[in-house]
Every structure is written in C-alpha cells, then in structure tokens.
Length: 406
Image 1 (cartoon, rainbow, N blue to C red):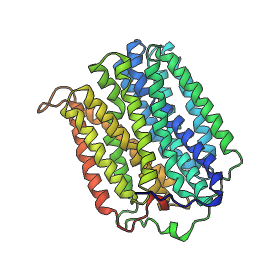
Image 2 (cartoon, rainbow, N blue to C red; image 1 turned 120 degrees about the horizontal axis):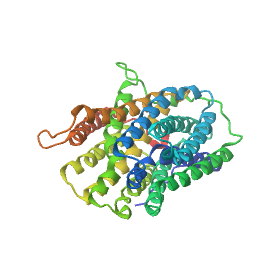
Image 3 (cartoon, one colour; image 1 turned 45 degrees about the vertical axis):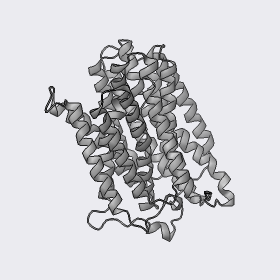
C-alpha cells in the first residue's frame, strides 16, 4: 500500500531553515535546560556532589521556574523570535554555571540555576512554537509544523547518550560539555533565523474557525487536559534513571533508560507527523495519553529493569506526541496570536508537574495498602490520564482538523 505525500508548495524549501531552527531550539531548551538533570542526578549523587534531598530541591526549583516562565512567556507575543533567542542564551549560561555549582556551599546556587533554567525552557517552548508555526503558516507549509517537536526527543536522547557514554566522567564535566553544546545551538538558531519576519501572518478564514471554543468554558478543557498530562508524566520523567539505578548500579546500564526515553519521543513524533497526518489531533492526543497511562502503571505492577525500560519507551514515546498535538491545537485555536494560549497550557502543564511531588510529600512516609507515596501518586496519575484520554477521544469530532491542515 503506497503512502501519499502531502503536497508542498514550491516555496516550501525556504521553510526548512525554520523547521531546523525549531528542532535545534527545542533540543537545547528541553533536552538540556529542562531534562538534562534527570540523567545527571544519579551521577552527581555518585560523585557525592548532590544529596537526594538537594536533588529534590533542584528538581522542584526547575518545576517552579518552568511555571513562572510559562506565566510570563506572553511578554514575547509581539516578537517571539526575540524571546526564543534570549531563552536559548539563558539555557546555555545556566548550564555552564551548573558545572561549578557544587563549589558553592549549600544548595542555593544550584536551586537558583535550576529555577532560571526552568524559566528559560518554558519561554523557549512557547516562543519556538509561536514563531516557528507562524513562519510556516506564512509559507503555507503548516503541515511541517509537527516536525519541530522531534527536537525535544532528540535533545533528551543526545543528553542521555552523553551522560551514558560519559558516565565514567565527573558530572560537572558533563554539565560543562552540555553548556557548550547549548551555546552552539543558540548560535545556530540565531544564524538560521536571521532576517526572518516577526509580524503576525494574515489569518485565513478556515483557520479562524478551526477550533471553536467550548461555550461552557472557552479553551479551559484543553488547558485542564494539558495540566493533567503534566501531572501524569512527571514521576517517570524525573525518576526513571534513579529507579533503574536501584536495580542496576552500573551507569552503563541504568544510564540507558534516558536515551531510550528521548529516542522514543523523537521517533514517535516523526512517525505521527509522517504517517498519521489525517488523524484528528484530539484523537492523537487521546491515544498518546492512554498509552502513557500504561507506561505510568507498569513500574507499579512490576519491579524489574525491563519494566523500567518499557516505561521509558511508553512514556517517552507519547509525552511529545501529546505535547505536539496540544500545542498545535492551541495554534489552531488562536492563529492570530497563539502565544497567550500556548503560555496558559504550558503553565497548566507546569502546575501539574509541580503537583506530583507535592502529592508525594502530602502522603508522607510509610505504606498504605502495600503502596508507598510514589506508588499512590503514580496510581492517581494513571487514573487521571485514562479519564482525560477518554474525554479527548469522545470530544474529537469526525470533521475535526487533521495534522496535515494545521
């Protein structure tokens, strides 16, 4: 059976620098600024430069910074490219500074740097989505927009492979290497995006009516589903390498979980963009959220390394598909100026991931009905993911706009 390629206008070649800029930007912002701490945390604990308690504080600071960044990303709605470049430089500088954070007594320096990295990462995600999708709409090749989200998985996989291959190095050297790579990525995006327009593209009538707001709550249902997604993915996205380290202390073994997570994220987005362009985006989001629920439930049922690896593939293979579908829906809902709605959804996502650790702390130590706090939080996340997946699937209209028509 042959697969029909979508028609691309003759000037689509000029869109590839935009797509490339988006891929590199999201790889730097999310793969390094947002998620590099996940594979490096067990190595820092191995080097005795970070305790488990301080690691939790660093992670919480990054979540909080991401939330603040999402709330303030609308500052750049008039010029998202400027916000993107500023945020990428910020990611590079904070990553470089983290290499020396352990030289300062106490955890304050690391907490501050991780919080700043969270702010810059949120700005980059919102601004990259807003600027890149607008540029592609101007070139009438909006079907290429889904490809920029492969950058997140590629960045995660790259950072994970670097931590895996360099697992014998000290963690501070790995932070330094990642910071230099992030700086190179920022320069590349600046060069590729130089001379590009920052004006809002003319809105077509079909785009203006693409997503009608829910009369009962505007776009609130989308925001709530996106927030639930943030709560659902946070436990495996944060603790998979640490969980694997308890089962296999060799970094060449437990370090593989994070490259698997990132590779699954990149390949899944590419597969959806290439082979499911005609599927309604709410259906894609619902399917991703349902598979993610299986990934969050698996480590609760089976305490084995293969279950951790399978969870990495299931969650990693769906969290960027859900991100892509959700943010493309926001672009479709507000084609004239999507930045505020993108910021609202990203803020809800950040609030959801902050809620995860808070629930763990609220439950406290001990076991209830055979589960500890992490287990109960994972169970709650699984239930919420299933419920929102069912709502998204049910709410998707047969005539709803597909990825090809974004």
